[in-house]
Amino acid sequence: MPTYQAHYQAHTNIALIKYWGKRHSDLILPVTPSLSLTLEAFYTQTQVEFKPDDRQDSFILNGQVQDPKATAKVSQFVDHFRRQAQVPYRVQVTSQNYVPTAAGLASSASAYAALACACNAALDLNLSRRDLSIIARQGSGSSTRSLYGGFVEWVAGQGDQSETSYGQPFADADWDLAMVVIIVNQAAKKFSSRWAMDHTMQTSPFYPQWAKQVDQDLAHIKPAILDHDLQTIGEIAEHNAMSMHALALSANPSLCYFQGESLTAMDQVRRLRQAGFLAYYTMDAGPNVKVLCPYSQAEAIRQRLSQVFPLDQLIISRPGPGPFSLEVNPA
Image (cartoon, rainbow, N blue to C red; front, side, top):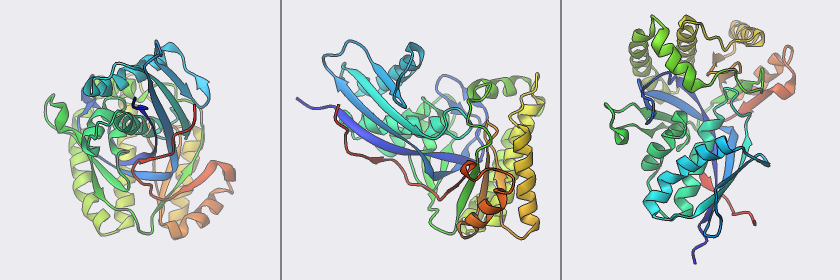
């Protein structure tokens, strides 16, 4: 009898051109394309085992058995693979997050990318990375970009056609490049990205301009990436991130992910530039700040930032790889 088990590691990604808004909520089809950088330092390891004799699915995260609501969400996602494989067995999902959960550090991206790859391998489906990105997207939108390493584009697609929206590699990132992540707060954010996007779309008077902004930013950042022009990449990414947060602030009622330490971090990055460093900030839906910079300057930047933030809250990450398999752990 087949063992129906697999173990995978996938890495988070940080969007340089942001995803903020869905045109189809159930299928998680985005209003705009987006572009990200996969990070080496933050990742999820997930093992799945389909068990013929079990009567219900189970989900263990960071050593803790999860409640029925969280388990049901995972079960619904795994159903995509069970249907394709025509395997009705219950599944045990054991996942370890090496990234704070729901803190704006893209833990869901690595989580669903790892789960998708593990299910694909365990059930011997042999789906392509593109097909996996389409399925992973329906668990967490940004996970479609964690199916690859380096710079990754999430193609928006057309209408309500799920198969037209997927992740695809854009460029390698094996040059002098890094992010210094400033962990302002590891706690889960007050409101989910999914709800906040919908709220912003419905209430911000400026949302109709967002798609135009993204198209413009993508058109300019792509050649800069191919040219390894970090200054232009950083300037575009920083402005795009602040444009996204401006949308959230303009919602009614307003949504604010900034904390006092977030503003301090952004000010410190501007001071770094004045001191001659190539350093640019970006923020997702959470208070933590990521600093795009050359890897050759990353440690010096970390030391400068340590004058304001504890060293253990400053993590250097090089660009990361796409998902890969791990040895299956004994039950």
